[in-house]
Length: 466
Image (cartoon, rainbow, N blue to C red; front, top):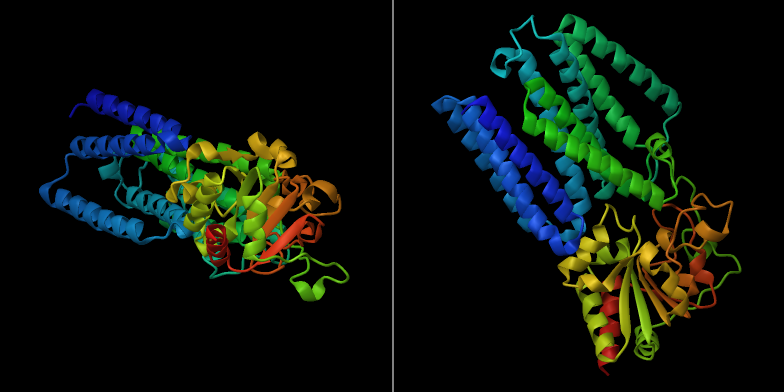
């Protein structure tokens, strides 16, 4: 295959990736976007194989690797629960980072096969690109592992504040820059692996202090890192497809991180430095002082919603944990049969990754036209009879709007407290991932439904049938 033909096919795959991103921007076109992305990747892989022209033995190894990886991916995709999608995304990001490190190492030890001269005489530009790619890849690898452990509950979701962490990070950052410059000047294999080790440490130290409330931003940020790592290695290998794909992933992840930060009234830098959610509010009923709550039952909730004209449902991470999305859709269908107008309100950072709630509702076949983003529906709460909150804690906390001393003050929230009645399903009165007590629990128009989300919704469905 000629270089010009390969460049054209890489351009075609790049266009398909762009169209894939465009398709994934809306639920109705997301399936088409996925197919376009798959087609683009298939073209890129086949073009690379034909361009490289590997030996028969090399081709067999490539096919074996694709078969092993593809089989593992297919099995995981079929078995993974939608509620575990955030940690799956974090785990996949770690593999992208690790791949960048491995490809950079291969380029260092076998530069002839990559077209970047010979051992001891690698182009200086290639060494710089290689070191930047491997640094970002290593940071992505360990950072994504920490994010996975936090999301999967294997590590505390609370910020882990190390003494002098900022000074340590700055020192490691300076050391990393020095090592990159030194490596680019000397092509030392020892310095290469020192760059890897320092970057691995930075990945851990950057993500450990970040609390669970910031996890949606962390996921999109690591997605961006993985893209830039791929782009850096693409420059080293002079592979147009890697450069285009990496730049698309990196830039889209960065834009998404900005959107997430805006949705939390947070600066990107403050998230990177960590520490959000370090404060902790009352953990349960024993710490409430003289504040009281109004507790209700499934029958109470069914009566209020059946006699309402408009109900807005606000799903959150509690719905994901309980896997209550199917029961919730059944409840909404029954309310619609009674003539009740039902809508869903989605906060930009609800759940543990961008679009988490949209994915779960789509899995339950909730009509796309019933789902609205914060800015499109927030004004409707004051005209609704019932706001039905199912496990969405921090994104409904009025303290973000009313209490200037609150750590989450200024974060846009869903104004569920402005509905005539707010029904709130939660296992307990404990604080959310931000570690802050929710003042919504104690408002006069709030009725707490303390139970497992799925069981409570199923009980409400039974009560609606009576």
